[in-house]
Length: 89
Image 1 (tube, helix red, strand yellow):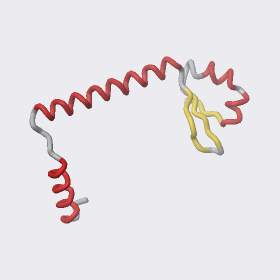
Image 2 (cartoon, one colour):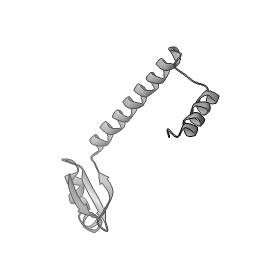
Image 3 (cartoon, helix red, strand yellow):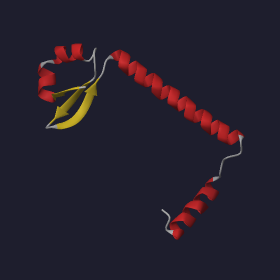
């Protein structure tokens, strides 16, 4: 991944747009990373992966509910209080 400082990225914005079609470009300001520019295609892939991950996690939760692997709020708080009292967290 290429890295540019914010001033150069601003001055060379057209070039940055061309570069991000090939690879992400990191933008630093005052020597610290503040942003990454990516192509629209990479962004769409990223969003698609996020959605896929969310669906998988929701399915895991639904599977846990159907299998009875759930706890109510009171039970969760009881276990947390016990762990705190035992010093395990």
